[in-house]
Image (cartoon, rainbow, N blue to C red; front, side, top):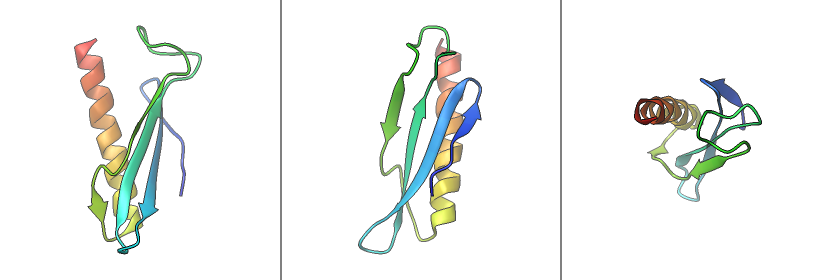
Length: 79
């Protein structure tokens, strides 16, 4: 499942990857588009793989979304 979300000027793409052991890895890509945040180059993106592992796909996706919000808030505080 791949869904694009927007949060405070960033594009967030959470995903869940099912592993051979049956668990789901929470993955995430955070980026910007042409209307980038000040100090960030347009089109910038960063991927975070296997943030944590879950028994259900929906839990992995929810965790990736929460993690993205916290990461973005931290970046905004440091800017």
